[in-house]
Length: 341
Image (cartoon, rainbow, N blue to C red; front, side, top):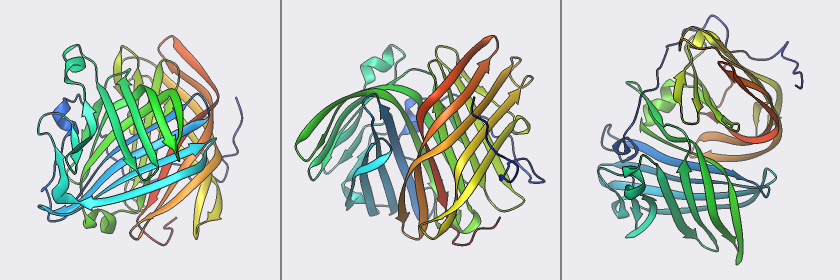
């Protein structure tokens, strides 16, 4: 396994105060709209996938609204070997946005862009079809969950992950060129966000690590210097998910370099050593090194989406997997202009 110089890295282990935020089971309704919680509601549905042919994709639907007044942003980002190939954004009125109350079917302008397979769900499967077009860029992809989904809800932010790991297949089209794709994907849904979220928080790091049968979803949410939430949920195919106590997680950001008028890390390290929380030993040592970055802004918020190369090992009980040079996706979102560290 590649060694990482972490002597000067920014570790999650400090005098910070953090909570043990536990993931719990979900139902399809958790992936539907939760709007009108606050005066101005911000809610989004996120999908990504890394394909066998070097392409990868991120698809998103984000709403900003006060009751029925607002907008919805639809987004398609396509990458090849981590580099941005296409970046497409479409804006519609929120009044033309509709989500089924019980199942995550999303319609925009009377067209279904996300379809949840209710028949598959009767057999215990979570399966989605994402199909829409922005200008000359289109997607028609099927996401089939391979492990159990979960959610974490707090008084200020809520996060569900219906698909920690999914098999993805279908096609993408770029300027008339159709490309058949197969790979591994992820889907989450966030709600209960508002302008006060940006006022009261610095930002967060988030990532997911997919191996053959094990998946880790991790995050480091920075409220201020003293208050940081450290999260890691480990899934194993056919065996559900395991919460990891924050005392047993270390997320290190290192190799900071200036990019897009911000000092951002180019290396990450995730360590898990937990033998008591789940009555089973769970360990990981994962190095994540920079491949490429896409930078964008969400109004005044800075956002970096990384493609990284991962190396390391993950263990659950007597089962272990080694990860070698595998591409993954990480994001860094920062509300504050000035770095507080």
